[in-house]
Length: 144
Image (cartoon, rainbow, N blue to C red; front, top):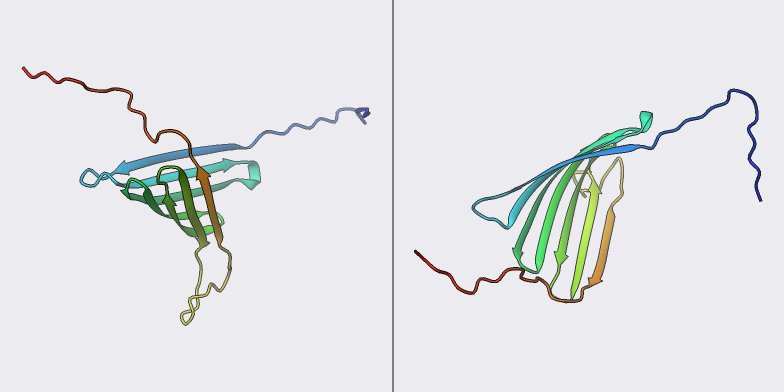
């Protein structure tokens, strides 16, 4: 179907795959273990198309079936904020997430001046089976 031939002498071309370096950390408050803070650094190494992004987030899950997350990102392309709400009772999972770039806003109407875009994602998943399986069960405790 196709025949590939080398045209010319000494023609060589090499390319490399882009590498991504992700470093992250999460901290849980000792007094309220349902509030967690996170930090994520992503660097894409691709020659002149390289970029770096740092993201900080706060995640709270006050109920076993509800979680909320707020984050802020700063990168070579600008900054953005995001919000996510996740509802996951038994049987299904529903989430709504929005990501809005930060910039200059008009003081009167709070409309972005220099760029206007927002990403809104929503989804639903249906889950099967038990929510959590206990691996170990303590039947009897003996004290000394």
